[in-house]
Image (cartoon, rainbow, N blue to C red; front, side, top):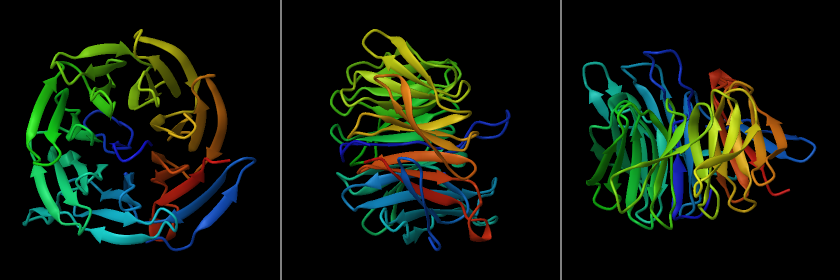
Length: 349
């Protein structure tokens, strides 16, 4: 991950059979393991983890939790200490149906440190919501985001972008007022992963069905398209912003995409079910979660080679990179009482 200016988030769950939605993800006993080069620490949190986002301002990880199908009653937003992996705060989303007890279930998450807020996608409710990082209060729910999937904050331009997977739409909000600013629809597209160039304000989303990247600049509502790999579901950018990386779920690869020439320059095999990836701002490496293979792979995108592979518990779901560490949430149920886990992998070796 980069600095406070650019915080990305992705709902980190694989797409499953048609008709089933595609969703994004209290520490006790911690375990540590060292591979030939990497040190990893794992702690159980709670059941139903989906994804996490790091706040530099508050030195905290915000983790989304949801369980079951509608009506979803077990859902929360956790504040986790990135060093101890201990849950510091549990926020319960508001009730949406008093009769069933259903709550506004949270899946994707992004942090806006400029305004000290947390943005989440409520995939099953077709909305996004905003919470205060200061006290955890629910500030707003914003409607009409069909199958809201991923969300990213562009702090420099006071903009938040969400992908509406169900309608082929990218929706932009003012990060201060929460008002909708733009709505870009690409007919037939399935926008999944999303990231933003914090210098130019250009937003990039993966089109899962179209095997391409959708690019929208600040100056035009007419998108452009760049080829990607087979089944691109997650996306990040190089430090220069001139290269994009996609996690290709179908192919089990990371694609290296030159955004200037519009070409895939490299394809690196990482493992079955490549699902979530993030750029390490320090090294320029790309860290990718392979859900089916139950591994995390570190790729040197310039050389197009795998540098390291770390085995995780079953079903790793999302990765967040911050301060030289990769934070991976899984859906393994391997903790006490079926709790899912967070693993911190040291990337600074």
